[in-house]
Image (cartoon, rainbow, N blue to C red):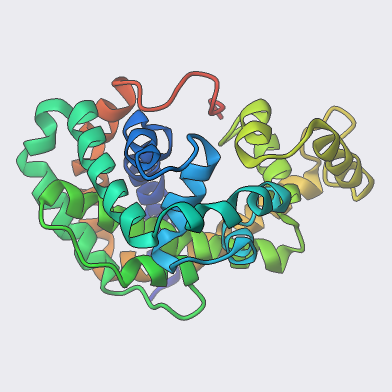
Length: 290
């Protein structure tokens, strides 16, 4: 592939992830997931998140969850995960999550949930996933072992989930190679002004104010953060290198579609993304404006 073509596809890969991500991630903030998994005995909140996302890997312990989720506090995971599989099974959680996804998307998308664009984009997403390899991608591999749902709406969500976990596994590889720990990755990403706000990052990922402050001090000593907590030039360059490597490791599905159909997917799914965001899928104050 020529350098110009590769650069174009890399940019499209990042755009596709940005456009598709909310259609996957909404479920972690949806009341439907809390309701469906509470029936199984799980405590609402982060226990539901850990169970719902890790269930495709089976009844794994806290070490596996900490390794694959990366920027969550291992102590929080260690506190919650051992109880999860005494209350329910991975199969029940997977089933409950799909019911919650269907309910949540029907609520948020309204009439668009049955629109032709759902089936069209589901087919494109499914084709993109055929190029994804499982080697070194544990969360992707676990989700790829699941059966595809029957309805176009759930097929779209499942396909986007596969692409999301494929990219996420590659992102963790890039973070490990960069030398950043889980909390350092979270703090520096928050400092970019994209993703979570600081308060939401600490609350959702389970880090205390003291742990966060100590990490900031370490990153300042390393020359990656300024005195006011923003990224230094070196810190900014490191984050750019991580994102570039993440995009590089995420190219396979978009090479499968090619630039033209990748761009078509990005544009076609825009009404779904806008409707979902406009319907309040994410509470104010969770994400920075960037």
